Length: 154
Ligand code: 4NP
Image 1 (cartoon, rainbow, N blue to C red):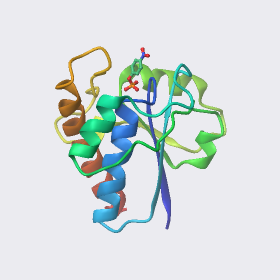
Image 2 (tube, helix red, strand yellow):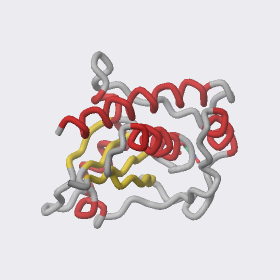
Image 3 (cartoon, protein in one colour):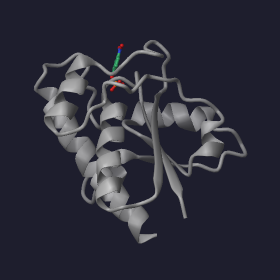
């Protein structure tokens, strides 16, 4: 059965595109049938490509995200996706607030799927140093691997 996952951060230019790339890679590796997209809880960067530092760290890890374009999360996403996965608690709180009553998507935090890291955020690297994007990549990869394993075992 085809499952679908939407990854959500604030701007959809740093963390969630990287989480999308990491999950795409993992799903390919495990040969799973999973639809994947990402979105932002804010609309500042709608239509823009990922942050250049995110593009660089993804490329360093073998993934080209330069064609991704930011979009705003929308109410229909709660019908279209099975899982909506937030990168931090603020994103999760926003999603909980806008969730329509008939929304079917199951909400979680990405690192909830990683044993021992439940409740932890993937820290926002936007105002940080370039090196922080390596930490982001490592965090989203841990989350993506755990999430893909869960989906595979369902
Ligand atoms: P993201 O990072 O939520 O991981 O895409 C951010 C991107 C942009 C801004 C903040 C965080 N901003 O303030 O514009």
